[in-house]
Length: 296
Image (spheres, helix red, strand yellow):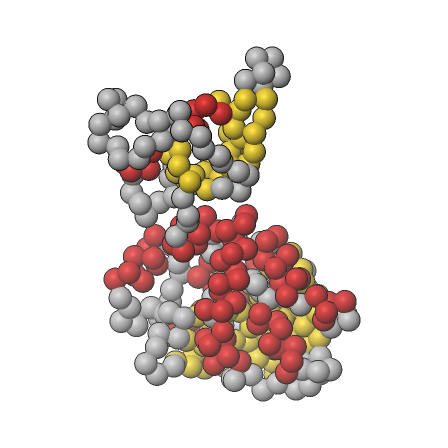
């Protein structure tokens, strides 16, 4: 048998991946390591599924090294039952889960989002009337880049980041380590549906590319309204909105990920239902970007 080595962290595909929809991540696995059966002393492989419940499994090491039975599976092109592979960006996104980033792929995805959302976020931040001592909240702080950029605009201010993903909290903390140590920024693991924050406590609130996933839009917007000071600003930022002439690939992603994607008029109705007295919609010419601004 040809000598092959699979190391912890390697991504492998089972040969049956050739038989399923490639838009899924079914039959992709991460190698965790090797083990020894306590009684038979047989070498075992420990691995994690990168789909469904992401469970941990064990099977004989030899099965990972063996070739496909091509008499039984004549249409399979893959030589070995399991072969190393590299994840595509689409697979990383599916495994990493934009709704609640998880595992190593979630961390990879957040690093990419820090870059891919940079221009969109910069455009939206121009709508904020920053004051040097603002108290600012970032809901769904993700990889932490938006907090970092806002910190530079409020030298005497204080910032709070909230995210319900432990991976996002970890990445945001690493991105803003110096400001956290200085007491200027704090990062909290919490849901927008139940913010552990005092009423009327923030001058500016922002959320970037997270509203698609909020579980109860009107209730959650009401939570934002609750913690916003009278006269404060809240800006919801997204790179797509309903009624824009989106391409079919983007529309498919919206369907596949079950994204909540209102039209500008629907955003206005949602904000008013949540208690915002003034709502202004900003659209970026030539793009599908939207920034919905709410004031008390």
